[in-house]
Image (cartoon, rainbow, N blue to C red; front, side):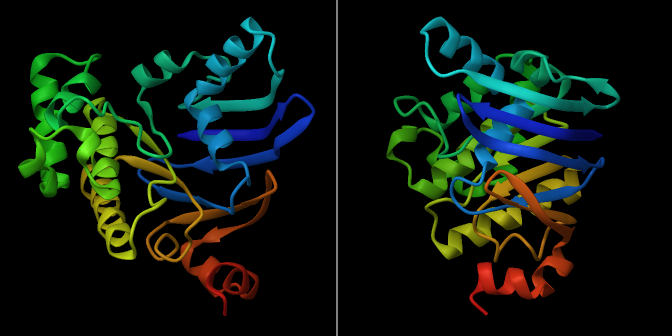
Length: 248
């Protein structure tokens, strides 16, 4: 489904991703785990195409130079230079870090806004699907999104991504700032989404404990470089991973 080869991203003279390669197959749940500043968000922005918009904006204002090398192939077609809007139309949808929502709009209004590429029936179906996946949002549908808790906002952000009907859902640090209980609730929903709806998921996260038990395959990203890879079970049993991420 997705084949990323030798991806290198420079921000001026600083390297954010260094020769990173990985693959994602149809229907998989793949995790990319790493500490802060490992390059996870840069990877998500590059896969979704947002890096192209960032390059354009920086060039217009004379800011830092952003350079991308390598290739991103999606369903057999090179999309390395494809605009983010076109990637969304092809089924690649990103739920960004720190759940950016429209705080002055209600939960229901946020979900409707997210469906601008879809017809009315698809939007209604998408909203029903989001409420089935996150039943806690049903009672909050008329509440302004800015008054939701962090976990509720994250549910809403993922729900908004689902309205677009993704084939490949990119999740950038969805567990950030959430309680362990809310992290588990969210992970359970993502697993259900992957297994029951067949949506392929790539999740970037720094919290390894709730992620490793549920992913099909995982990649460890440190300082922009791939350091380890394997199944979730293999990574959990790796002594280096145990020491670095579980304190064992």
